[in-house]
Structures are given as C-alpha cells and as structure tokens.
Length: 342
Image (cartoon, rainbow, N blue to C red; front, side):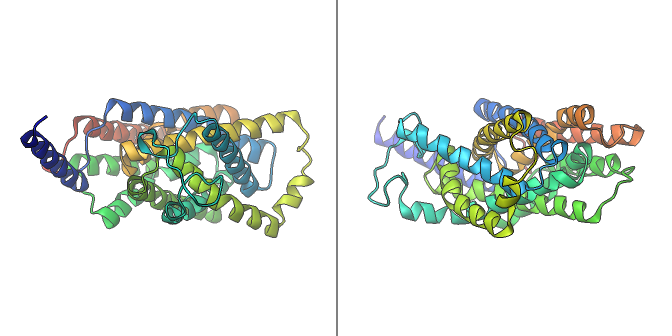
C-alpha cells in the first residue's frame, strides 16, 4: 500500500469515527453473536439468582454478588497465568513493573475506577431488585431501562438516534406499562429498587462504552479490573453489615441443592459479565439494553412456569407483545444501520 492509499485509509477511518460518535452504526456478525450470547446467559442467571434468593430464601443478596466476583477473579487469574487469555486488545501482553500479579499498569487500573464503582452499584441494586417482585413483573419494570440508557448516552457522548429507533423505544415502554397494569402486588420499596437498578444499569453500560474503548483493555481486562477494585470493597461491606455471619448460620448452606445453585450462579455470572462487556463494546449501550428486552420473552415464560407470579391475562400478553415488537424494530434498525436522516 503506497502513501496515498494509507492517507486515504486514515482519512476514511477518521471520518468513520466522527460518524460513529454522532449516529449508531450497523451491527456486525460478531456483534450479533455477542448479543445472542448475552441473552442466553442473562436468562439462566436470573433463574439461578431467583432460586437462591426466593426458593431457598437466602437473605444476603450482597454475598451472592461477592461469591460471583471472587469466582470470576479466580477464574480470570488462572486463565491469565496460563496465558490462555490476555487482558489487552489484540492479545497484547504488556509487562508492568507495578505490584506483581496485577497484570495491568496501575494508571490503567485507576482509569477504570469509575467503571468499577458503577459496576458495583449496578450489581448490588440489580441483585436486590430481583427479590421483591415476581420474575414477570421484574422484567416488565426493567424494560424501562432503555429510556434511561438513551438519556445517559446523549448526555455523555451526544449520541443521536433515528426516529425509528426512538419510536421502537416508545413502543417498548408503552408495552411495559400495559403489561404491568394489572399487577395487584404493588410494593413501593421493591418498585423503587427496580427503578434504581435501571438508572445504575444505564450509567454502567455507558461507562463500559466510554472507558472500555479508551483504556486499551479487552472484555477480560475490564472484568479483571472490576474484580480487583470491587471485591475488597464488597467484602468489607458484607462484613460490616453482618452478612457473612448470617451466611455462616444459613440453614441451607450445607444443602447440595443450594450449593449447586450458587455454583451455577457464579459460573453464569462470569459468562454474563463477559457477554455484557463484549456486546456493549462491539455494539452500544442502548443495544445491550434492547437485548435485555428481547430475552424477556424467554425469562417471563420460564419464570412463570418455575416461580409463578403475574398472571398472563389479555393486558399482560398485549404488553409483552408490544415490548417484543419494539425490540425487533430496534434490531432491524441496527442491522440496517439506519441513521437519524432516515
């Protein structure tokens, strides 16, 4: 390639970067695989968490999150020591003179601090939000996250969307309100926790999209930094709150069924976190949120069969169908790459 071709290529990439900051880009095949992987892991993780917190009545949601973080960090450490994975983009192995065993420079770790804090809030609030409402109602309320995500992306990076995408989000939210219209088990605290989880989710996903692309770390690296920062904080918090003592005295702690559910929850949380980072960096924060809506159809069906909850009356069916329709319209917009000019 001669100098003229290189210059043309650089100018083309520069122009593409400017366009990407203004409009949403079309989804690649790798992005589609990432989205499907996320939806599969998310459905399974919600079921395992619901089983631990509701079926076994485990009282400490923070401890579940702590177990998931420790399991993820141990697995990442083992894979990195065996050089099976790298923490940086393009499989780059970077040697650092910082604290042994960290694997990333100290300044890079500090750069990811806002992401780690938002991740911790997202995990804690999301875990607690599962407890107070039924699985169908949980997915209904969580569907409003798309509005928060769109707002946060606009504030942080001035992301603009076409009228088709905005319309699809409107259909999703409208469907969520219809689906939950007959929920007679209204709990103000539980609902407030779910909406707090929506806000934390929007901030967390926007942080991934922004910090993940500037830190030089891949999805494994971002997960590793989150574990390094969040695990000691969460461990101290659970100790202060007495959750560790409660866990030690939990009646089902020695139950094989409970142990299997917790193990599956931890393993699935690892794969889900990787899928979230991959999907958000390859696609966008809003796409990640919409994928959460697409998985709801399966979550609601399985959750209703296993745990019961919101009855599937006419309004509920219409609302869920509208939400699914809105998600499909958004997916079509992403695949076609429709810009605000369409």
